[in-house]
Image (cartoon, rainbow, N blue to C red; front, side, top):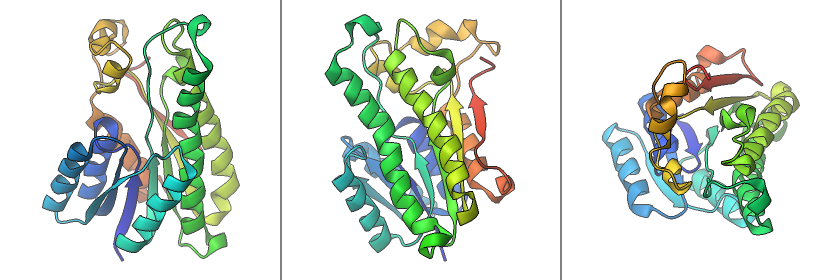
Length: 248
């Protein structure tokens, strides 16, 4: 039976790198995206060149109906889900808390937190021994911002990632006896397009000299940490975190 993985928000950045890495490890992949169908199709094509099945599914994973649709498509087109990587997230323009609106705060929290809960819920229904599943892995992509707080820039984003850290710990305990391992990767200053979404595309180059390693990270380095959590090499690891943050 082929191994199947869903990576949310995988048309670019860390998500795309993870999709390609897990395909190289023998997985069939569902590439989830919201807007950029061309980029998602490119990732799918690269996976198919590796000899594995891949599909691209447009779904807003912060919306319940979209999430149930996404998982139904995976069931029908790829088969039994064994791995979920919760990666989808957004960053909005840098600002202080005193200027944040209700709309902005709720958009960040719904996209970055609600989506992880909804996708985890559907994954558990398919993986858990309790529901007749064969077990599986969930890896959450958090951020070093959850520890640093991102004052003056993205406190709302940092707070959303703090929620993901707590979700990881609690969910890992909740489903440990049901054959599901839940772990988390915290990227730091990594070269992705997301910094442009926050209004500073060159942010990593501005910050990198403050890091112990004196450089920004690459998406492939984050994908490697995710792949370890997915692999059997981490079979006795759950509720754990890997920092991919250059020492900060």
